[in-house]
Structure formats: C-alpha cells, structure tokens
Length: 260
Image 1 (spheres, one colour):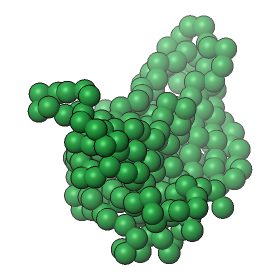
Image 2 (spheres, rainbow, N blue to C red):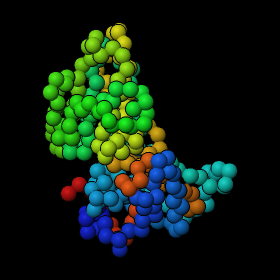
Image 3 (cartoon, rainbow, N blue to C red):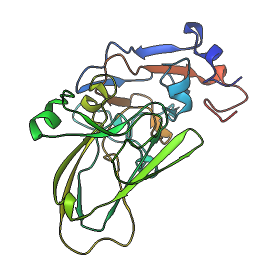
C-alpha cells in the first residue's frame, strides 16, 4: 500500500504529532522518538496530497545513546528543505534578488495553487496587505493583460519568466496573494532590486531560502538519528500543515509517497 494514498491517511494509520492548529507564525515543534526503528514523517493534509508533493521524509532511529551533545545532552536536528528543491515559488521564505537590466527572472510553481504579482509599497510587502495587489500571473498560469514575459505549463506546474528593462530599475515587491495574503505571510514573497549593469549569462531563479521550514512543494532528505535525539519542525501556517508519523510496518512494500 502507498502510505500517502488517501486511505493510508486515515487516523488509524498515523500518529499526528502536531496538528494544523499547532503551527502558528514562527512556531517550532520538536518530536523525540521513544523507540528505535524507522518512521515515515509526512504532512497528512489534503488526504495525502501534501505528502505526495514532497512533504515527507524518513527517520531511521538507531538504538544507541546519542553521540553528539548539546546543552541538554542530546542533539536536535532541524528539518531543512533539500537545496535542489528550492527553485519553487511556494509557502516558505524566499531569497531576495539583486538584478541588472537585461537579466531574466524565472519563477517555477504548482499550477492551480499560487499566483504571482506585486504590491506597491514596502509597508504592504511587510504586512502582506493585498488591498492594492497587482496580479501578473494567475493560479492557472495565465499572464494578465499588459504584463511582460512568457509562461510554460507542463505536468501540473507552470514556469514564468520575464526580462528586465530600464523601466524596471528600482525595487519590486513580488508576492502570492492566495488566501488573502496567507501565502505571503508564510514567506511567499520576494524583494527584487534592479539596477543598471551587466546582466548574468543565465536566468536568475526565484529561490526558497535554505533555512529550517516544513512546507509543501519542497523536498526533504531522510535522516538517521540516535535514540534520545529529537527532530525540530518550523512552519508559519496555522491550518495548512501537520506532522504525522507512520511506523514502518504500515508501509511494508513501498516508500511512503512513492510515485504511482
């Protein structure tokens, strides 16, 4: 059975360590396994859809005393997205971009879930106030009238890119407006500063920040820890994500969330 299939996400198949209501702005929760073994850690939201879209990893707990120590005598491992999955416009913190006229800016995201647009001021960017939001690309991946660039749609994803001109010199406040700014408040925003100069040879990718964060759309490496160590989860979205732990016996024939 595939552990991320809807049927496997019934309450009987998992232990929810932290619920969707537990995660609030800046919330961090620590899970400490109580026995050695292999655990599949997933987000069970959407009947497994978040799990299948990257929000899963495996924790192998070895039956040995912790070999690394912190002040409290054990090690806490932060859950950090894989670097090779960070080229994704999703509900997580993003790196700012400093670009030159002639550079191409490249977004990649899931069709049907996220839009791309601007708010006009730093204050609206900081507070994720969507009152004056100016949409460039809608959630379906359609560029709005008079907006620059091109979109490619394939396999449930869309990629949007546009080339900077002299008209773009200045500061631009890109956000996702979905959920009345809720996605923005989870970190889905990017500050673009454009100046004159020599452009880069390759497009500048809109990248998620390589910081501890538990969200959908990114990928996570499995980890091996020792009994007594802990795993730390950070998220900013109350109501969007949980932490569910499935024991290995519930996934006897396939990895959780395996394709197909």
